[in-house]
Length: 299
Image 1 (cartoon, rainbow, N blue to C red):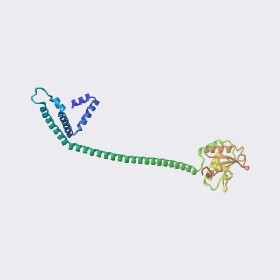
Image 2 (cartoon, helix red, strand yellow; image 1 turned 180 degrees about the vertical axis):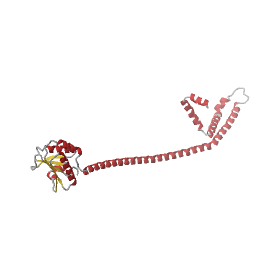
Image 3 (cartoon, rainbow, N blue to C red; image 1 turned 60 degrees about the vertical axis):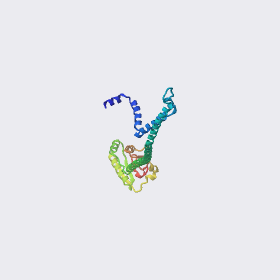
Image 4 (tube, helix red, strand yellow; image 1 turned 30 degrees about the vertical axis):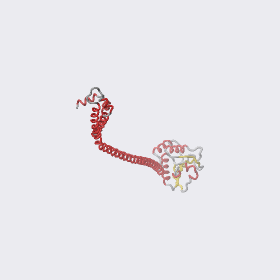
């Protein structure tokens, strides 16, 4: 075993493959095949050795021979005729095995073709299933993407609805800033007007009143109205999203306290606008109209 391993290691792999290929071919020949080859060889030798040309070459005519060359040639020919018969008989003996081997090879080849056809059918079925799975995957991916898009849209709509339903208010920081900014500024009277049919507007108006009172305004009147037609008086407000509208005596020179209040509310993300005028107001007086949320955009 060790010697065989050493010999295999000493011979290059390519030479080993060249040796193994003929050996593999020879080992595939059955026993009866070797007999058939031997009988064919016997027939060929017999045919070649009984020809006149070979006999004349083998037994030429010589002067002084006791037996004539024809007698020797006849005896030699008889021997090879028997050899020819033996070779033909051997081939006839091997013929059934050859027919059986050929038939067996055909059967095996047919079975192999059937298996190949079956494999091709199975491959076709698997390919169809694979295409179906890929199609289902595409459909599920598209459905998932569509579901995610709808979910995002639902979240967005929910956020917008929450913002619409959320009551308006004034932050504590805005109240503090307004009080600081109006500390030494002359202040007039303020009237907060809204519809008495809108609870959200009334709650927002009360919060504005508390903020202005805390900022030092001398008089802050809370005036809900049964008839409040701000949107009819100012149609452009219906599409502007305005929360508060400041009304003063002179729109060209509104009082400083009203300007600072409006800017403070705007910094608190309250959409405040001005300035409609009302001659009945005092110089430092102003009104704040609280507009209902339904006049905001997209409502």
